[in-house]
Image 1: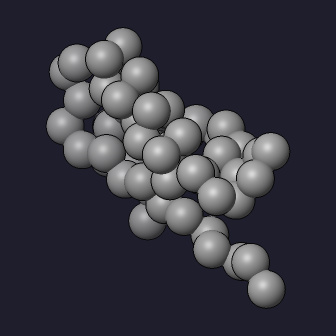
Image 2: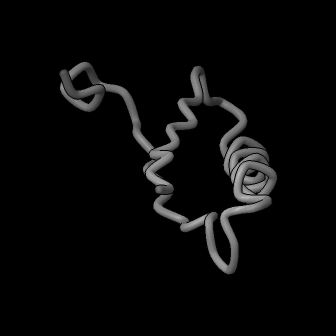
Length: 55
């Protein structure tokens, strides 16, 4: 199911937050999310998806 099909605007931020280290990646992700929300105050929902693939 695609949100755009339902007329929803989608912002897909592809910032890598696990560089230079995995440690702190969640803090960096939160900073990015806050910046996106500040720039798009009419947003209705935020999905912060992580792909924890560290071995």
